[in-house]
Image (cartoon, rainbow, N blue to C red; front, side):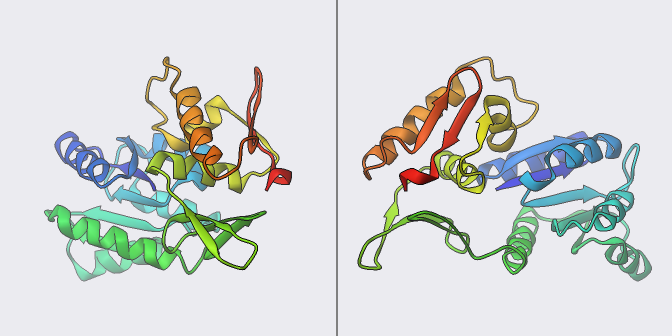
Length: 232
């Protein structure tokens, strides 16, 4: 699950980032509304939820909401603000925010509100994604193999392996570059001089081999990787 966090207060932003990462979210933290819009333009479909502060340098949280809704984006948005007047809450919700959290707030409440937003977003996206015999269930965050008798065998994956296989299932028979994979699975601003993508792919392939899928993900040398849908 990936979050776009837009918060210009350094202490609060750092605390939110730590909390979200501890809960296994992938977090892109930016401190400027204009920069946040650039992230959204380039990576919108990769985010599960967005957290916007109301007052930001560049574009405000309100303006970010309005732009997203003008683009017909259903991305769930949690607005953070010190404004607690009823008129302000109505204004934020009318701009397109899905929920509203008044500062100061507890991290437990923020996490609960994020979980609620994610449950609502499941009503927008299909409950399952299927490619061949592979079935991804969004309600349980599991990937299973549909067996001949109608049974389903769950594939035991780590969080990163799940995110990788989900990404490939969303783009069957398409070549995904290393940079695309990094942008989807890891933080955009992180430094990946290491061979982290290749290493993670080896682990995923080793896991898939245990279930009989030895050629499911192909290396397209010099370009990237591809999920061969005909193999399943």
